[in-house]
Image 1 (cartoon, rainbow, N blue to C red):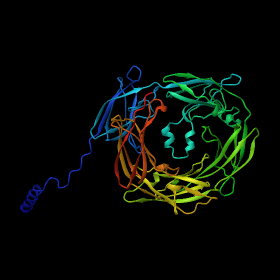
Image 2 (spheres, rainbow, N blue to C red):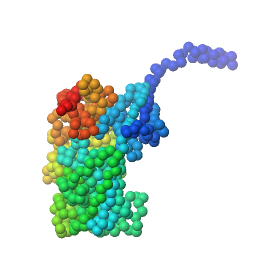
Image 3 (spheres, rainbow, N blue to C red):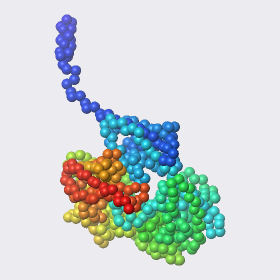
Image 4 (cartoon, rainbow, N blue to C red):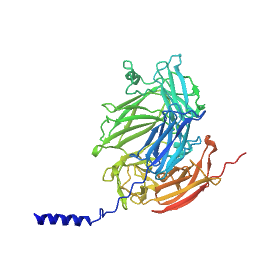
Amino acid sequence: MLSALIAQVAAVLLLAQIPASTSKPADKAPPPCTVSGRVVTAVGGTPLASSRVALLPENERRDSQVYAAISDSGGRFTISGVPAGRYRFFATHTGYVDQHYQSTGGDTGAVLALQAGQEAKDVLFRMTLAAVLTGRINDEDGEPMASIQVVALRKPTEGEMEDWPDSPSRGQDLLPAGMAQTDDRGQYRIFGLKAGEYYIRVVDEFVPLTNLNLNGSEWEVRDALGSQYAPVYYPGVTQIGQAVPLVIRPGEEAHIDLVLQHVKLVQVSGRVIGVDGKPATDVHVRLEEVPAGDYSVFQSSDTDSKGEFKIKGVAPGSYVLQAEQYSSEEEGIRQAIYQASQKIEVGNDNIDSITLALGRGATVPGRIEVSGAGSVRFDRTSVQLFSNGDQSGGAWARVKKDGTFQLVDLPDGTLSFLMNGLEEGWYVKSARLGGDDLLANGLEVEKGEAGGTIQVVVSNAGAELAGSVTQDDKPMIGARVRVAPDPQTRYNRLRIRTANTDQSGGFSFIGIAPGQYRVIAKASGPDREDAIASDPKSVSLSEHDHKTIELTVASPQTH
């Protein structure tokens, strides 16, 4: 017993001589940031309670955290616990146009850059009243028309046209800015519009809502009869080329009444043959106006048990008829798309002899590999090959966990390659099929054949490019910086990167693919026509590069 006690005491004394911790203390997490300020009206500075204010990471991902708060009765807000980083920052309130941080009235504002532990105080959002468009839609007899779709369309911004990674012809598109359906009185109301020019389109196309209570079988009847009214554009014309833009001022409630004219419309019908030569019973067929640059509301139908389809209420004009069929792949992913398309001219008579055959295009397998260290969640990514012509076409595929994919039914022509879903810092290092470089020359498909397997390599060894933009020796806040391959082609547009400068005029890019680039900064005021830009600069980037660049925007000349 005594010997055991002595042993225990000796053990305690021995332990007392050992330091409390022999391991290196863990690094403390950097202190979070706090952002606070007020939301007020642009006119009068009245506090706006219940405004939503949010911070979103500049390079937002699927799992990105959103930091937000709601303003109190004095318009004040505080967002705490925000990690250091670069954020898109904006405020929103019903009846007002969304306001971005440090916005001068252009389309976007500045990035908010936060250092560890920083307290950004006294941020002020001045909210501008949104415009409203109301009116009534009648038929030619003056009767109100219910469940009619009214769409306010706008021209894309210069930045949107530059950033679209497909055909330059997309720059002619009009984009929907707001939409409404008429009620039983034929009345509609489109709210939340920013001041500007809009093209107004009215079409007899009804989109039923899941919680909408229709009287009797109204939806089935309308679907069976099809439309008998041609689309109308403000101020009452049937072609988008004849439409006149409507200018709406901030906070204005504009009123536009339009009349839908009863015209003779026809039916387009036919059948779809599957890849097995049998009638395809699970195919979606849609009819799209051409040229593709004009905004159009698709008319569509699904094939029945005989593989047949009918699209009613088609106005005379030029169209592309496209059939699409999705097939289930392994792991429950709806991946492959079989498709067929045909251009048709619609006159005053029904068209009932169209046959679309699926699966006549090329099938190309592919594999993605990682260069260097790191790993990628391939099942969060997808690949696409698409046409650069006026007629849309191509194929899309989800990548499997093992990095393999299969693109099905690729149309003939030269197609551009695109990969989506890569995590921040990763880029497509190469994409090749045999000796062909898809990022330089695209993929050539001829007579339904491409040959071989697409080999894609991704890497996280990209370059970093940072810098600043100044004007009159002062930081230029909210300027848009664009980094584009030099020379730029239709096939390497996926390498284009854009970012807005922060409150210090700074910008930052990571994960840029090695190569030669052209860098330029642009800024615009409330009027898009008064855009100004820096002189472009060339920069050569290699793997793991960390380079900085300074851009200077000249002051606008006064006349």
